[in-house]
Image (cartoon, rainbow, N blue to C red; front, top):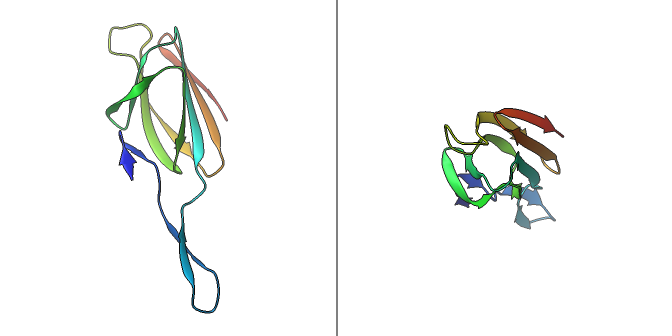
Length: 103
C-alpha cells in the first residue's frame, strides 16, 4: 500500500510447511524528521505529507527523498536521500538550511 509517497507494506513469501505458504511483510523501519523551529512542512518522494516536523514515520525498507519547509522559508532543507533498512531508525534534523543525521 502506498500513502503520501511512502511504501507502507510489501509482501514476502515464506514456506511454513509441506504445502503451506504465507505472505509476511518485511520488518519496517523508522524515519524521524525534525526541524528547528518545529512545525515545518515535510515532503517525501515529492509528496507533501500531513504531518509536520517533528514526526516519526514507520516505513517499509527502501530509499526516500526527504525535504523540509518551503523554498525561501525558515527552516528549509532541500531534498536529501535516505535509505531505511528493516528494524532501522534514521533521524534527519533540519537546522535552518542544513541537514544533520544519525542512525
